Image (tube, helix red, strand yellow):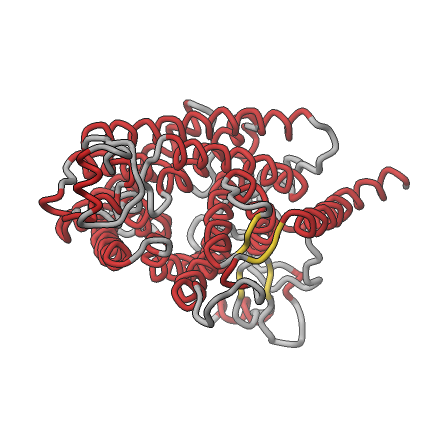
Length: 497
């Protein structure tokens, strides 16, 4: 009895303890930024007017887009949306602290609308990792993974932004690549081949439709994700480039999905996921002068890459490398992010004052001449910028590639070590072989389940005795909302007719 109570108390106690720690740390080390503090604010206008619409779009992507995108599993809908919300709420608090410590410029961490945005970006990285682990680890393990991952995420971003001074406005390298390969590394360490035998790792029509809700939200709001922290013409350009890349990616995905199917039909897995890859692939170059046709080209190639990945690379990773990727994050986030990093390096190498004007030095701060040089003195006569490192276009491109390589390396090593932690530490509530991809271990479910959980080979559905009920109301089970059920007697009379 005592062991049962301890097992039940682990997660709630950990969450309450963490929340108390957050309250204490915020009380000791966090304050409002200048534009939000009544004593220091010099104007009634502040950053909220500029950033809040974009922030709200990103916030919806985190809690609605990512949450519903992962509801495709027929018996894991509660966990997909619920754990997504839990992790998001946990991470935005932890990320404000961690990122604030890495980028601290005042006596205390200052929290404002921009730090809220960067916290949401950090949450996106964790939720991408969650996609690789979906259905195979418990909530206690997920909380531990999230806490460790954000610390490593902050370190990697600090290296990439502060030291390598790489440009990645849409977070393709620092968010998408990091989250994907961190999650895949955790999944590899915790590999259990019996996952492949689970009957729950499948979809039904309604779970796929719920997942498409997430897809649509992400697809619509992705321009805000890639442009939220950009300024001026950079932000306008990021919206345009992402908008065009997503449209091209969507068309290409439909085409390739039909081509790789032996019957020429569309695969809902491709449509739910690969249609979004253009937003990832254009993220690094979103604010660069890649021209509209360049955005279309990047989006088209991303749709092709992602769809082919779902069709051929995911099975290869699972069978040959023993990397089980529940949501296919390698195809939606990993490979498109690597493509984005390479595209960013190419675009950086081509950036000159001929196509950027003096805003080149706002887009690439490291290319500003060093302080005191004649070039810097001449430049400040035309534009006010802080001294930089005097990099050439080729050097900036090299640092872009270095940031990509460092990100993948840190994410992979960090994921492997984190995976070892949740594998070796006992009693963390890992689901058993019969509990993979199933809500029942973690959630109170409706007693009467009016669902057709077991699809027959011919596409029909078996009817369970639990479906007998005089009230013909639809029920919610996991993530499949079914129409009013049919009784066995009604089914038999229909068959006889």
